[in-house]
Image (cartoon, rainbow, N blue to C red; front, side, top):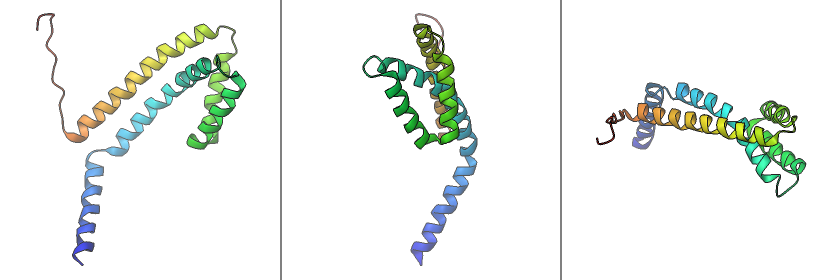
Length: 134
């Protein structure tokens, strides 16, 4: 009986903590940021791995994996993004642009994760001192 009461208390405290920390809001904003990082990342993976394997083989394999993880509709949308980026014969330009957006997206994802962790744990970032000799 004590075990059931203790387990019920753990579930209750978990639910209270889950709602107090706004986990659904934080996970939604992280997912939103992550979606914009996926296209450039996939473009870079396809471009770099097509040097070793054929582009068609790589695309088929990646889209199969994406479909199993993200679902048919999301994988199809990412496939369309990559197709439109690959239509032009300027693949080097597309790769450079992809790297730039990947950097921006990855920075946003890590920043969002850091803010979420700080909010959940109740931490504040230390302000950095300005100046070269500080």
